[in-house]
Length: 488
Image (tube, rainbow, N blue to C red; front, top):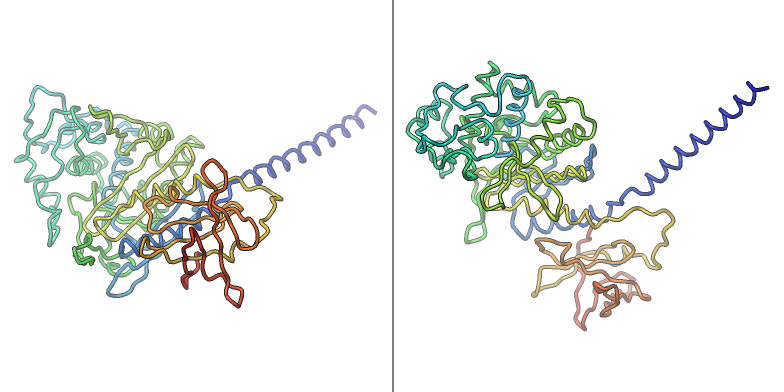
């Protein structure tokens, strides 16, 4: 009898447990943020910015934890050949290369082969730069990772100068090093240094006993399946899958095509190429390692160490981790890096606290990928929890969606459904969220602006043609005709 009661109780407990797990799963599903409208706004905004800012091509990806929730490309990888960009388009990522060099250094540190406070000369006997401040502290691996070593920004060659952008070889870098001198005593000021990170690449090769390229491929790129990331630019893919680089805008509003280049001896600081999808994988790996712990390429505590601030400039404004740029936006810690090479701009911006990352690549100089990363982040912040059974609006908001002519005062106004209302978005916009105007449906085709204090402002009325299609809206007694493009 007792055994039977025990079995019945055990079965009842199992039923309760299954029901609880189902309810928790349903709650998690219900509480998931609905990004659909936010991602639609991102798409509309980036497409417009690409046109208004005359960008040749633009590829982006947004990561949440282990999922790429958005990836798009706009424009052309090559203007003359009319090659379209895709999320698989390859770009030079320039200084984002430094993150791979930093990871390699930390792997060697964890293996006990180097220490961060080792002097550079301990591993590179030919390190003979002139020290202007002999009484100062040593130039260490740590100080190079944090750009506080006092080293010059560049090797003494004009490789950022047109027309050829001729980078020095490893041998040429070594030849000129002895003729260069330090700028500051170590650990005094932040001074970004491509020379410094190039020297760390030499340390990776010297200590590991492998060529730098081979080490990075074997220890980082292959294990993370970063199949489209290389420590060089693949010339055979240039002007096709490898985007062609273009200059900043000239006075006549055009961009000049720039020649192909290789970073050569500067590659550990600036020579890599990649795609937004590969850098999305790179970000997802970091979120995974931080959440699960253990070891995958690096130990989790090592990655946390890299993400912490290890240097603050005397102005208390410039902060840096071990290889990573570390800073705050509205109180949240952001880590990552940007890249700028002849004809290319890129950024990887990660918010570990939210497990979100934003990757932007552009095949033109003089552009601001960080602006797009920040803008996408601001838009996602506006997303709301998905609520089951929420009452739908009385009208089909898609009837009003589209682009409306705002000339001569502005470019255009996009109208999209937004959280049960309509939203007006002025384009172009550096930050579309700041200019978001919400409209509440009143009756028929009439809406009213929702003020910041949630009271209602002026009336906005849409008008339809004889076929029943919306063809303009009226605000403050002025007309805004609908353009022949939809805000998809």
